[in-house]
Length: 105
Image (cartoon, rainbow, N blue to C red; front, side, top):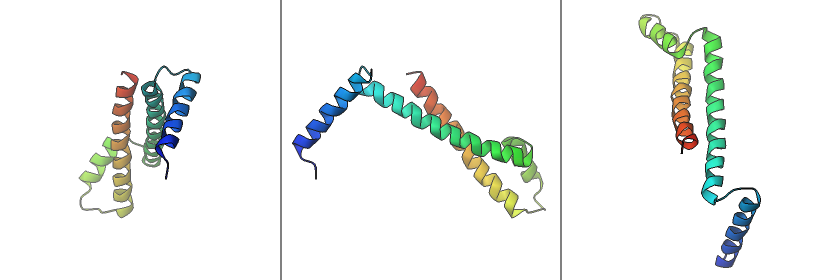
């Protein structure tokens, strides 16, 4: 378990490293880190959506409409893909919103 002295030393070292790295504050460094994380998540979900777009040759919205119209014909693989695609599509929008906030702060 870290002692208070260890924690203080760690905090001091982090602050010094950030200042030497060109950051004016810890908040500025945290913002840059948060942007990096958001970009990584965004890119991951973009790749997933693009994989489904290529596989089915249409957008998520078009695919969703097509599957809803075909109620009599169940294709579990397509429906599973659509659920995965919807998750990736929603996550993509979520991370884009977060990135917009971070970049415009």
